Length: 290
Image (cartoon, rainbow, N blue to C red; front, side, top):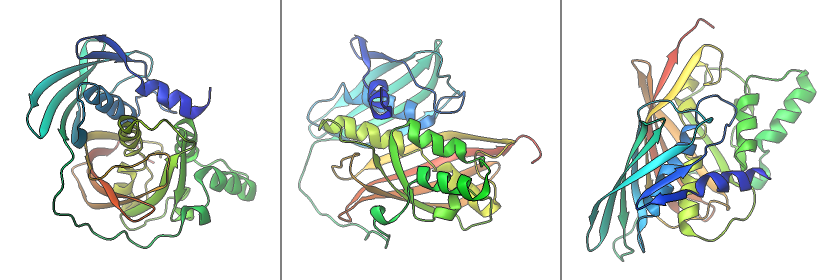
């Protein structure tokens, strides 16, 4: 089974009864659950209880670390179905404990005022190397396998094609400004169901995000002795999108303090439409000396 099929499988939740679902997570190179995976599965659970309305505001609080070895159960509470908006609360449970709680708002399509910030200048994704190509080139030139092999192998396992705008930033531990950007897409065409594309966007929205807050400190999130962990993650979906077409993810971290980093992100399609925004507060604790 290819990586994309595996990811689609973890987003295909099993119905257990009214507004209850179950899924078996995958491991993506770490013994803890990848935050984007459990976030995406919870988003999918909420979407399965709403018709004819798209998610526009998704706010998740991560309460406990999960494990990829046990199934996750999802319980959806229907808070409101109004004339234009629907609201859902979803708890994700593992071994009887809530590991993530999501508040989700859905909105029916309406005409109205429209504006957006312009997409920042960026090279076309086809002109940039993928993380996999960059890794192979690094190993060929240096004979070393960098710690960032974990991050690169994660993108492959996730079925994502990721092209960083700063190729040399993938492997080093230099002090850099708190900004990062990459193009990404699912590696092959997937079904047209909009719910699936929103779920895949949620899945990819956590990738490289918290690490942006560590760039001014010259410490990658995967460095030995680091304990990175999402505390809360929010995603706002502004316009329809396809996750199997190129999306530009532009990230910045205005602040880090008290062992937490705060990160913001904007996501554009290749035509320059601002399709989504994201924000995250996460733990960036050093638990051992480098």
